[in-house]
Image (cartoon, rainbow, N blue to C red; front, top):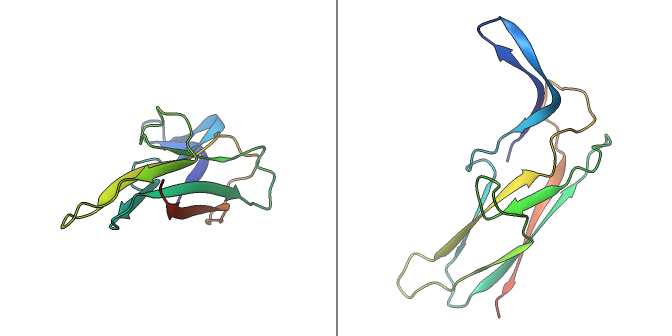
Length: 127
């Protein structure tokens, strides 16, 4: 996953940068922020999600949020259950999408990519 935080964007009509007050994250396109899980076993599984935001600059409470909706219309989730695969079938799939909890980290813009955390997905047998 690769997310870009910006406080400005190039305006081709005025040939100037338009500045955002709080800035914005780019990378929520449904592909870049997607986690796809395929269960090919004969038993349902449970996947638990967590994000550890670990950055050397104070990001002011920035957290990771997981949703089953690619357009952020559902509230955050911490786990999902994936059905067992049907015999001879391709496997059961579910998708989860990652978002940041807010758009305004307290940091300067950088011309290079900086890791800001780790996403962990833990699996265990379903009930």
